[in-house]
Image (cartoon, rainbow, N blue to C red; front, side, top):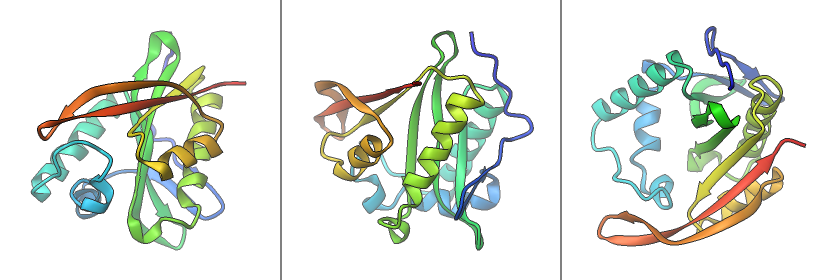
Length: 182
């Protein structure tokens, strides 16, 4: 069984990014990530409608981290503390040394390699510091950019579930990708 401790919060730096703890001062950016239709296209959940929902999400993230059940990094450029995205392990199966990765990136910052840089750093932390054995990703099969990111980071497709997710009156498929520590 994994023994995790996210206190103090594990800040990660890369060449261009700081992956840091998300706080209530980030609520405006979190609200954008959870409501902007360009970001929500493949997430298959109801967009947030108020800043209060962003505050509730941050409270949930903090509680899960305090309980060592998940960890979510806010992504900022080294040149600016403003949040441009998130990346983390939101579902950790401690008994199986496995976690599910999730990420978002503001459209203004897409196509610059930031998410690849952040994902590689988070995966390295997961395997080398958290002692994960495997990481999975559940992605909408139409999300070509996300699938490309996963494949660049060594993930392989393990399954395709037909119409297993119901949202907004329709069913959609899920593609499951995974990466096993080498």
